[in-house]
Length: 395
Image (tube, rainbow, N blue to C red; front, side, top):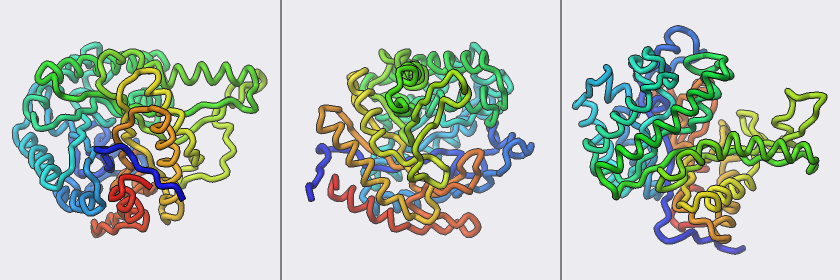
């Protein structure tokens, strides 16, 4: 069997997000929605990683990771508009020190879906001042955490706009297409402003986004379906990245699934998700490893910036498919690298089972199984498979 060796210096890691693992993030819009019953689950203590981060990082180190992606909770840093918490800055400094002590390069996300309550009360991402508020926060973080080299401004901006403003299943629970367009536009402005604020402090910083990209293909190569693919690929994958292309040092991609478009005038509401679904995750998402090759190649060829895979994972409570999922996706990622794509790192989602937003604790993405009653962490079999990959720098 051919051995696949990834480039020297390749980053291997896992990803987490503050609200999903820290616990007790009481001052953001998600916590508020949970308490009001607008979300069917409550995050509560989550994984208690706010207090147990060293235990989590030991697990990452023992898995031979050399990097870790996590997010800073904005509502902890700026609990009131313009009022910053030195106590929380000190906490995150300890988090970063703990990573460095274990040989893990920190990749820090500034915004991963949650907003401070004051920001939400001001209109959230619909407010024309939102980009300025976000840039001020970014600037503050860069000054306070100069030891961080890699910054991710915003996680999955199009997902946030869709879930919050068209589907209405996430805060602020709206169904308003005009609002969604305004939010998406403000998020591009927020990224660009934050990029400039971060780089002004230190031009050597590396700054980008974590963009959820989908591989679209056409059902039986029908002409109308092909036109549908062109439209959806532009609207979902490229529109946002095109508007920040001059303000990113790398392209961050989150890849989970593909989407076959079957365009029919007789059923315009059923164009999406015409997948074979031969293998699916617990989430019902089709497992389609080839898609990571396509989104990676497109990101590299379109923007000519280094590419990081910041999320790729599977909801698999019994851990029956995860090992194969990882291997198959990495084989396709390696093919993109072989064909010239400058890919610098792969971060599996996720290190731990966690609070999976509107699905609560029902979806298990972790290489490490969590007992949410006792908070015991238990590595799954796939943890050891990923450890072997990280140790070998390949398959």
